[in-house]
Image (tube, rainbow, N blue to C red; front, side, top):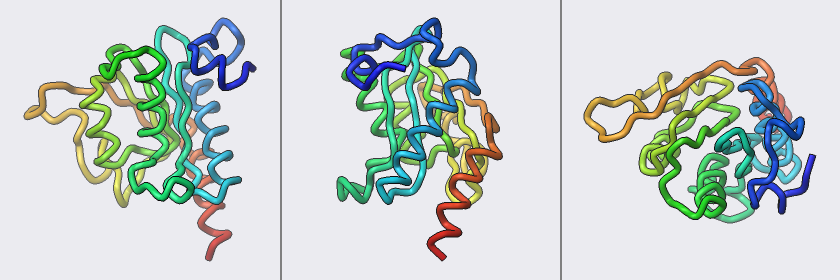
Length: 167
């Protein structure tokens, strides 16, 4: 797989053997989650895909950046916007290892992404279906297609192991 400079230029694609399915893209998000864990962060990862190409990666870095908004999804959205040089991310799919929170779901609506795919449900803060239904709210001017449960057990296991080690 190419390096991050290739990702930031949008050069990696499914044809390069990176991933071609929801599960394949989620595996890349899991790589980001493991990187966050290695850095002492809560292991959540995200990737953004546009036209079958990986355009952004994100991993939680709230501690490193001393920034409560530095969730994996937010990092990936920011990088994706820079990559395609547009704050509107129409047609972009975001893959994230856990159900997005209200902040991240709101940012996805503001960015006008087309789709979010997540791994594990978040019963304590998920804003797609567990606690709230932000992405499909009829009062909003944009709705985001959502699919959950992709590699859910593996995504949940990464988080559970992280928190078990800290107890």
